[in-house]
Amino acid sequence: MEGKKWVVLVVIVSLGLFLLGCPKKAVKEEAFAKKTEETVGESDKVAKLEAELKAKEEAAKKALAEKELQAERERAARLKAEEALREKEQRAKEEAAKRALAEKELQAERERAARLEAERQARERELRAKEEEARRALAEKELQAERERAARLEAERQARERELRAKEEEARRALAEKELQAERERAARLEAERQAKEKELQTLQAKKEEPKRDLSGKEKEFEKTLEAKKEPGIEGEVLESRLLKDIHFDFDRYDIRPEDAEILKENAALLIKYPDKRIQIEGHCDERGTAEYNLALGERRAQSARDFLISLGIAPNRITTISYGEEKPLDPGHNEEAWAKNRRCHFVILPK
Image (cartoon, rainbow, N blue to C red):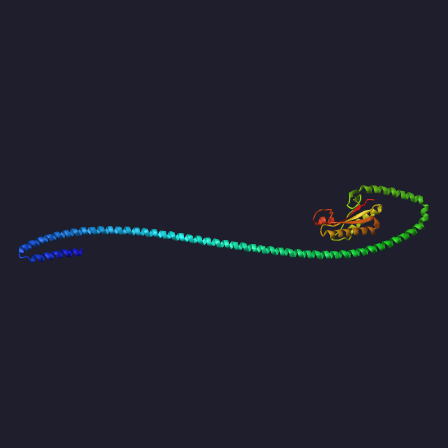
C-alpha cells in the first residue's frame, strides 16, 4: 500500500514540473488544474481501488485463514487418526506380545509339568524298586528265620524223641519188673489161696455171676453212648463215645497237662471196666506249621496219650495211634480259639 502512495506522488510531481515548463502560464495553470483534478480523481480511484484491494485482501486473508484453519483441522484430524492408528497398532503389538508371552509361559508350564511328571514317575519306579527289594529282603529274612526255627524245632523234636524213647524204655523196664514182681506175688498168693478157693468154689462162682450180670447192665448203658462212623484205612466202622473225652495241648507241645491227665485217668478207668474194647488215639494239630511237621507232632501227641494210658494199666495191645496233623480240624476257624480246639487227641473204639 505504501508503494502505491509513492507512485501517485511521483505522478503528481511530474505533472507539476511539466506544467511549469510550458510557455504560457494560463495554459499551464489550466493544464495544472486539469491535471490536478485528474490526479484527484485518480487518487479517488486509487483510494477506491485501495479500499477494494484492502477488502479483497481482507477477504483473501479470511479465506486463507479459513483454508489454513480447515487444513489445520484436517491435519489435526489426520494426526489424531494417525495417533489412533498408532495406538491401535501399539495395542495390537502389545496384545500380540502378551499372547506370545502367555503362550511361552504356557509352554514353559507344560514343559515344567512334563518334567515334574517324569520326575514323579521316576520316583515311583525307584520307590517300587526299593519296596520290592525290601519285600525280597524281608521274605528272605523270614525264610531264613523259618528255616532256623524249623531246624531248632527238629533238633528239639529229636531231643524229645530221644528223651521219650529213653523214658519209654525205662517205663517198659519198670513195668516189666513190676509185672514180674506182681506175677510172682500173684503166683504165691494163688498158691496160698488155692485150697481156700477150692473150698469156696460155689460161693466164688455165685459172686462171679453177680458182677457179670452187673457188668452186662453197665455194658448196655455204655453201648447206648456209642456212635458209629467210618474211618479211612480201617475195615468196618469205628465207634465214638462221649464217655471217652478228648485231651488238648499247648502250641507246639505234646506233653500231657495236669488237667488233661485227669481226663486220661477217667478214660483209663472206663477202659479197665471194658477190657474187651480196643481203641485208636488220633493226634491232631492246628493249621500253623508245615503239613509234614504237623503230622509228626500229631503222632507224638497220640504216642504221649498212649504212654500215659499204658502207665495206668491199659495193655499196650489194646491201643493204636494215628496222626492226622492239620487235615481234620474240629473248628475251621483261623483264630486262637479255633486253634486251641484243634490241638487235641481224639479216642475212637476199634471194631472187634
